[in-house]
Image 1 (cartoon, rainbow, N blue to C red):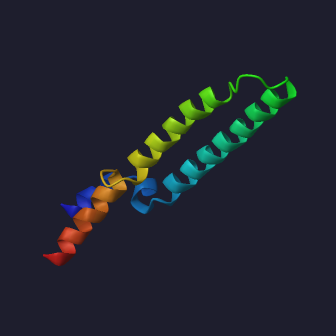
Image 2 (cartoon, rainbow, N blue to C red):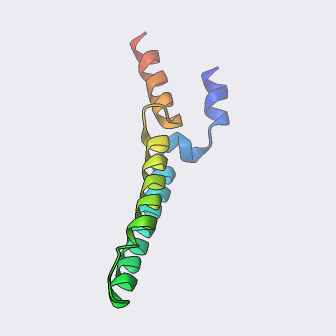
Length: 89
């Protein structure tokens, strides 16, 4: 049964390295985009800090993705829990 599970899991989920790399690249894009929006805001005279709206919206998406990828109930987290149970039995 464990052999079938290992065969059906993509290598990116198996190791978690690819998933981590993609997540970090998306977080860097969010940070660069946020910096760009603040720069545009400051160059256009300031006023109402409108960059906060897209920054918060995209930040919520980044946090939700982090929880789904690395949280206790993610594919990787469940696999680790299953391995821990198998080793302790």
